[in-house]
Length: 218
Image: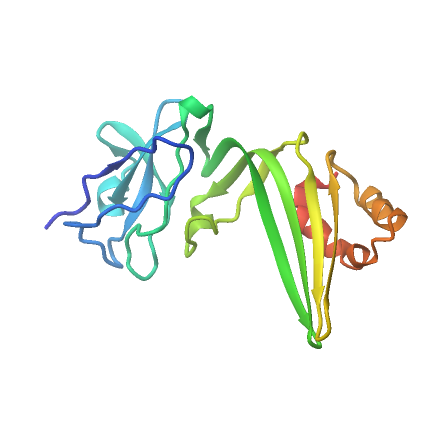
C-alpha cells in the first residue's frame, strides 16, 4: 500500500489552483494527503508536492527541506481544489517561507468584507487593499478552499488606490457609498474625508471599515 503520491506540481504561471489526481494515494483521516512546499536554502518555495505526514513529516524529501503549506480537504482528506502557492521567476514573483509563515511577493489586491443584518436592513462593508507582499500560515488554510484563505498584508502598494465601500439594502431600495485613498491614512484622516464629503453611510460604519483595513491604517 503506497504511503504517498509521487506527483510533483510545478506551476508555470503565477499562483494557480492545481487539481491533482489522487490515484494510488491512500488518503484518509489518519494519514491525509496535503500540499507540501519544497524549500531551497533561503526558504524560497521551489516546488510543491502532494505528500503525507507519514512520509514528509520528518522535514525532508528527496534531499530537500519540505514543510506543510496547504491543509487537506477535511472531507476527502486529499488536496482536491485546495490549491498551492509557488512563485514564477518570469513574472518576478516568489513565495518565501520563514518561521511558519509563507510570504507571497506579487502585486495583488486583498479583498475583505463583513455583512450585518439588522431589522431587515442588510449592510455590507468592503475594503480592497493593494499590496506588493502578503502572507499566510498553514493554519490559515485549514478548512479553506483556494481563494478563501485570508491573507495578511506585508507590504502595501500605494501606487494603486485602496477602496472602501458600504452597501445598505432595505425593503425599499439599495444605497451605497465609496471612497478611495492612494496613501495610508490615520483613523482621524479617514473620518475627515468622510465628513468633508458628506459620506454619512461610510461614516456610520467607520469602525467596521477601520477594522477591515487593519494595519493599512497608520
